[in-house]
Image 1 (cartoon, helix red, strand yellow):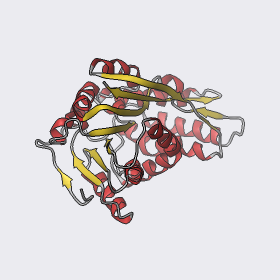
Image 2 (cartoon, rainbow, N blue to C red):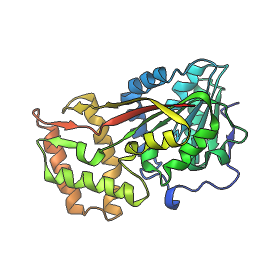
Image 3 (cartoon, rainbow, N blue to C red):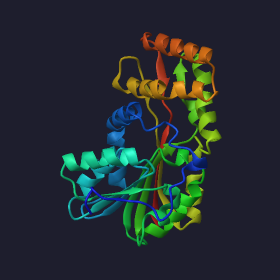
Image 4 (cartoon, one colour):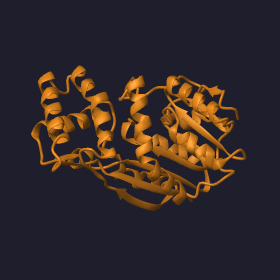
Length: 290
């Protein structure tokens, strides 16, 4: 299927609680996602190897965004395989089309729709998926169980679902030494996601949901990283602050004074070689369809 085709769902996409992607789809977020993928691409590729993604497979990229992971997966499955990329943002899917075209990839199928309505988005897809992947998608969803139900229909027997997502986000994302102004904003980040139907502890629920809907959890682990000022990984949270902290002010979760105090704390830490940040733990789950 050519990457030039975008298939709409049979009914309009309905994001969680009627809201767009919480981090936005502007150029600032596109740049942040590009940096994020590069910094986490090694973990993604290791996960795909554990999920046994291979040439000739049909893969599913849930909440694909501008398609950084999609393109990598498409190169792995090769011309005999295909990657179905689902996202509710037409702007992101357009960017994916450009990426696929520039790499002459004709095995990417883009679908505009809500991952919470997978069987509505992917017609005649029952039992066709070898490997499905979702990275930082479930934590934003109002109804993660609906996605698992859809995957139970689409993933073939013996097929795998691989997920990277959060658990214990608010408590683990911490500056050292601790700074109260920083911690206050981190708690506001979690509160803002939950107010929109998301869950920064969603990985705690996923093993049970997959077991309930006909999967066996065959792998569960955590990737815990820290970053120090001046390191490449320090720029991952920094890019998030630039994109999202102003949105917390706009939506009333913090005040302008809170924002200023936060940036002072972050700048102080950035200039302190003895400081470090404990990044949010990224949990990895692989579930196999029974």
